[in-house]
Length: 483
Image (cartoon, rainbow, N blue to C red):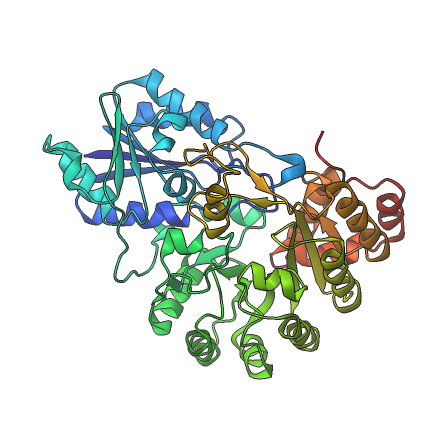
């Protein structure tokens, strides 16, 4: 069948991710013999117009959309991202009779409800590399979609689903064959590389185990580095980013990857998301440096033992103190994430967390981002507990922004306490401070013009410490409770 895949990411928080998930699907559908076209709307000022041109050029029988986010997960400044996707789908409906398929993390979490919310014909639930080609084959043969695992569809007025599936193994995304990297490079993006899927940690609020499963499926580190080398020859990205849900779980897989990267000496820049303070030591950080990593994202969420235990993070405050010391000594730039308001959170536990930030994360190489309020997502342990307690309906619509905030925590006080931390330590920001402003865009453009490697967040701590900027943020704090 003729398939047009349309990628649009309306997020304005930090740097939106390139379409690695959709590239996996495009590569698999093309390998199955379908005629695949790819339209990248991420940088378009008028995405609906660009989509209309692609529809006229390719005349697809099926149009697929990847939906990454339900919203921006910021309680005090929520932005609904599904609306932008629905507008693009309306463009397809107005154009002609093509079937519309939606997938991606947001769709997998929402399930069949995504069909109604987005006005789509089919939803891919879970990994799509096998599901999409099989769905296309069923549509081409006019067979019932009920025989295809991992989808939701409309049967008259009824929404039906089949159980999702996970691949036993996976390889390279093939992203280099589907996107023009030059616009991404100009905007300071990092090239995404996935080395494993699955998360065994079971944090109460997190959706990764729902999306990828708890069992870890690893790629051969040699194959991963082959992919990096191949992409580096073709597009020369300034930085590659390992996008595994938890970089150092399991630890031996990361060390094997680091050894292969160090052996090959490709000269590429590397960064990563999702470092867990569990199992960190000098050997691990030395291996990261030797492999070519220059920055990391670390997501402890709290520095209070009772809250860490309630969130089932799998580590304690002492692990976080050790990791902070190791990160300082390593010289790596680190972006730290903290999430206030989880079960058991109180003034005392917030003080523990923010005092840790003030005492341990003052390095000019560190940027700390604080969120207040936990986004509730369908199927997580925290959401199930709220439903069991009767505080959330069993059929609650999670396409609407829904947050948990500990009843023992006063939100206004917590935000004022974050403002005091920002006044003391300018390399701390709160997610509700606002979208990227003109000065941030200027900083990013300047950094990229000078040839500095992404991610650009590495430059924020020193910029935020400049006396005029620090003074303005102290004098006019921009973090307040929602009206």
